[in-house]
Length: 236
Image 1: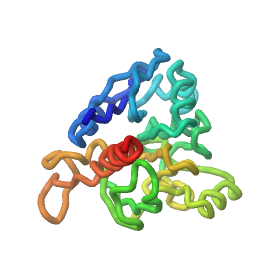
Image 2 (image 1 turned 60 degrees about the vertical axis):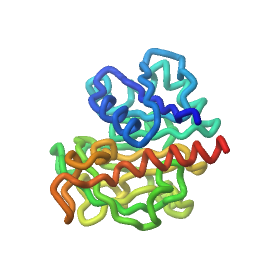
Image 3 (image 1 turned 180 degrees about the vertical axis):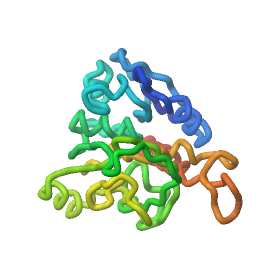
Image 4 (image 1 turned 180 degrees about the horizontal axis):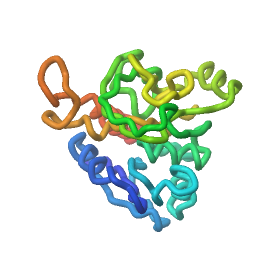
């Protein structure tokens, strides 16, 4: 069987692209490095927009990257149903590119936050969340300075009513995101964005602490195995 190929796009200032590639490989797919200045997705089956500080976070986080040449192809692929995952800065890009609604602003406490964050899976019916149970609590690392999710009350009500909230912060809201929103999905379920970093919780010895052992948390692996399973189902 041909391996699922998942592209990871590098933008100027990306920091977690290699980590995302490693997560894809550990999950059992083939990572494909893509460049922001290209118009070629190289035949990949899914896409990851990784975390970092694209273009130095000038203007607004993700705003310039959302206009990069490859984003035209990302938008087209997303419209055709390709699974797309935006992580942290990648989530900001998806919002700036209008693939997901709302906006992301400076954390309400005005400080960069880094912590192992509890999340509740609010929608497990997407291409990136099917490995989880509905309302399951998971723990993955969070690190951001502009992670406060905002939207109009009307948009927030629509997100709630249509089941488009993918993840909520549990235990503590680390950045002031409205309604504890940590991540979203589009209506089709193929585009998902979130502020925490699943690629940093895929390998024992390098993830969050658990009750079983230090650094043993691998909840992030479910994001990538979900996409692989979704794509295998399409191929079948």
